[in-house]
Image 1 (cartoon, rainbow, N blue to C red):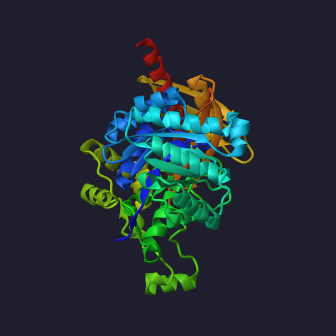
Image 2 (cartoon, rainbow, N blue to C red; image 1 turned 30 degrees about the vertical axis):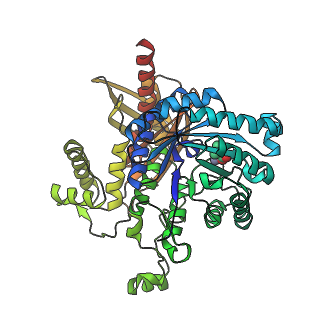
Image 3 (cartoon, protein in one colour; image 1 turned 180 degrees about the vertical axis):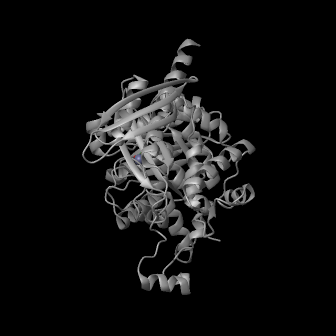
Length: 511
Ligand code: KIV
Ligand code: ZN
């Protein structure tokens, strides 16, 4: 039996801080539930003091998650710790995660505090948090650029004050595997009371070494690993959960470590996150990129067909990629569809199933064969459903390479049909402008992208649209075999999210 490694997922905190990855309450709860299916040990649900929305989402996740520890981040300040506790106290297993910077650069320029004062604050705040909660994690921000003797002292004192986990972050992604191995070994050897706390590491990917550094730290004695789905996070991101877990899993012969992650949930977690944030992983991304299990060259294809282990070190099924090549089509019935959904790991309610089956049937009218990826796209699209304040009724586009594109769009709002038209720089731009006229609010289009879900002329096009209003970003996703329609649906979905939030804010103000 190997050493047990705990997986601390910070997708909803550090990950959510990365550009373009913000999520609303419903999306965060959805993601947290998927992390629970994935069986992570700890979910860092957010930074409760950061905003009202952060506080509410940490609290809601704390209420809904039963199997994982739920943590909130807090600076070493009483008001942060109060907010963190007020939000996580509903959890079955709550944790307060407090931090203070310890490098000379941060203490001098950011905190403007002397090292002695930093230790005093850290100790005081760990004791303060301990008054609320048994499970306290302490992080020394920018640890890898801190003085090792000073770090040893602060860790010793916070453990004495009650910290149950001490986290050693490589905040700016500066360290290297060998250096970090020695760093962790030093702390393990020199912090006299280290046996009373768990050693955690948290690596950023600025030099592309976050996963390697994390694994080196585990070899030196770290037993908690902080990471994010798809490696999202500040700047170049955090260590990617799927890469660490699959490295430990695939090379168990070498590492001999265990973790409780259900690897068959990896792909679903990655796709859900991409669907929610609209941020796709690069095609050649290890484990979850679309090419990670694709074999292009004839020699490789031949080898894999003879014996998959020739070029595959992991089985696609291990990460939840279905091997089932059977396609569904026009003549597939409800049972076949339901069976496929089960195989893909989706357990829908009766209503959800009826709705999904209707969408599947609509799709088979437009597309000869429906692949698993099409079905997954339909379901993840549903996951993000929010009230359709504006619903597309129909659109007509007149476009060509020698004429100005003109779009006429009819939407339904409150059972009323509203139609408007606009010209634009191409059909999508014209349609968006017509919608803007109908909605009549100020917001900016931040990003627009289009991907094909599967191959072929009749493939579904998936559009992702990001709009910004008052500094907040709203991501919409639309799916159709017609790319103008998927773009319009994505734009409306982002607008509906924005309007839904405005309605909720108004309701809160009135009550
Ligand atoms: O990168 C970092 O140092 C952090 C800490 C707050 C843990 O995210
Ligand atoms: Zn971080």
